[in-house]
Image (cartoon, rainbow, N blue to C red; front, side):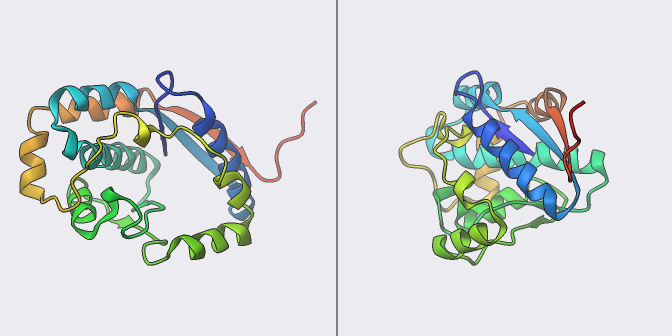
Length: 189
């Protein structure tokens, strides 16, 4: 599942994730990518949530949308590329708050790796060059200057209360575009 903010931002993040999924499909022979337009959902968060809490709320909504997609696909867990402490939303406190939004376990295989270790792993599987292409990801849209780094579940639930969370999640799931990948790629003609 990839979240993007087109048309608020350009399509670079979608093109980048398309190339990454195509590359990773070599290791599993078939993939399905859900592209979720997240800009309108972010706008609703901006209208109802104080700036410091927005990134954690975005992440909780992303987890909920991904969980619905996972359930539709019969998956037993979510997996992310988060690494502990790399950005404000990835403190242990905030990860606990994000996890509390869903019932499925969230696997984080990169959690204890630093930037150099992650880059080395990306080089080993052939995704590094694509990964470093600059893009406008949805997390850069409406990002506050000083995001909260130590939130609590109680605090975030209170801040999240004015939002119609089920409607926002349903919007994300229903508007997702789906792309299929196979390896080797099908030949044209």
